[in-house]
Image 1 (cartoon, rainbow, N blue to C red):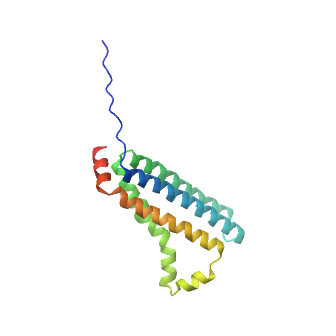
Image 2 (spheres, rainbow, N blue to C red; image 1 turned 120 degrees about the horizontal axis):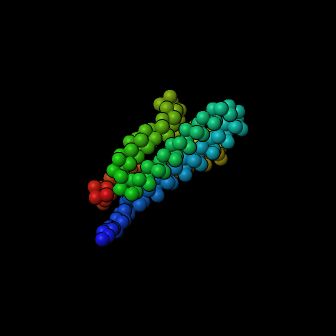
Image 3 (cartoon, helix red, strand yellow; image 1 turned 90 degrees about the vertical axis):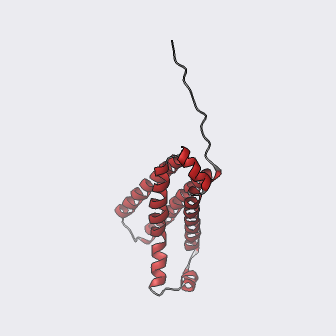
Length: 155
């Protein structure tokens, strides 16, 4: 006698979770784009050695890979993944992206001065960074909306 295998239909994540997942992928893509821009600038300026660039690239690729894998787990219902994303990338990652500009302003730098000196590459990088930060912050908010909470409790 054989036993029947009972399967349960997969629970589709709510729109908040699906959108948060897409925003995490957007943030990773923006981060990768910013990495390419930064490496190009460092190589052109000679401000970093090949070893320094290699180490920075290895760290970023590790973070990007982990972010995608953890975001996928969050999309699939892992509560630990939501917390990891919120604290690791939402708090620490965002802080790492804004500390330099805030330090510039705290040291007496002016926004108008920085904007007047900005070249095309700076504007492109700044636009990507704005998309990056907005994607992260919006993803964090969406992951804690009521429908997301219900989904993650159930999953």
